[in-house]
Image 1 (spheres, rainbow, N blue to C red):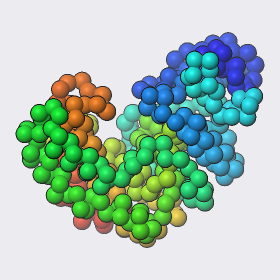
Image 2: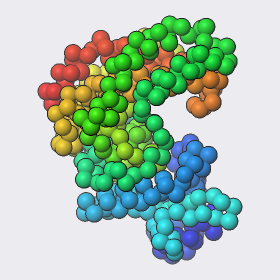
Image 3: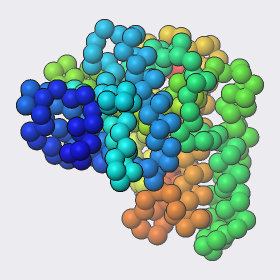
Image 4: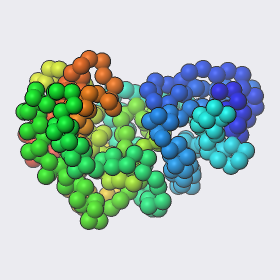
Amino acid sequence: MEQAVYAFAIEGEPVACRAYGCGHINNTFKVETSTGRSYVLQEINTRVFQKPVELMENVGAITAFLQEKTSDPRASLRFLPTGKGLYYHRDAQGRFWRCYEYVEGFCLEQPESDADFYESAVAFGRFQELLRDFPVHTLHETIPEFHNTPHRYRALCKAVEADACGRASGVEREVEFLLKREEESSQLQKLRQSGELPLRVTHNDTKLNNVLLDPKTRRALCVLDLDTVMPGLSLYDFGDSVRFGAATAAEDERDLTKMMLDLHRYEVYTRGFRAACPSLTKLETTLLPVGAKTLTVELAVRFLTDYLQGDQYFKTALPEHNLIRARAQMKLAADMEKKWNAMQALSGAI
């Protein structure tokens, strides 16, 4: 780690280094130097991101573009180059590192107020807006087929047929629920393929804890965790934010009576996202509710597929954890269906 930090163009000598943040994928440290400057040093988890060079090519291009679009140095992460002019360093053990300037701020796991949720919408909407002219086709797909919902359904059907863990006989109702929604859940992918929805730079992990907030004003400063940035649809980012932030219960809530869509939070997020991203097309605006429901159903499909395959992807704390998660997302999708007219009205009226 000490050798890694010296590979980057930091100011001063490192005087302190400690674990930083609460991420579950990359090893992250805050480095303080003799000049009073601080930096964030990360070891990229190459088990999860198997093409770290492509990942950092994406990140470097995106952050450089954002820096040209705004005068506020806090509006984008600022990665430091190495002596070779790269935004990553590979050490003697083959580990990949990166380093960016530390910005004073804080993140939240859950919104403490409507204003917090609104600011997350502003952050991700502004991210879309600032990058609307970025040459999206130059980006690598860090996780191929990530939001290709028909692809996720094909994986589910294969898992049901293989029944590798003998679990299929206990989830017939769940499979039936999801298959009934396969056609409508494939709508976004078809519109992407036809070109009717514009291809944009998408973040693909639009949770509130990936927004850095100003410690004084609580306004959004910038978006964090750019590892999953790749070509996609604005509706992916919008939908995932709503699915997570406007739900009334946790992803693994057992008591399904607690899981609903908070229409007020939906309105708050929609208002912030649309205000920050005025370049949304009429079709994108019309399909905002579809984005929310599609991402919810898609995640239910992924959870159930992983359950049938023996919990190979998502971390679990108990044998039925992924099944519990799938049922919670299905309940949320069902509640969206009950509130569909209201969601459509809110999306169009704001």
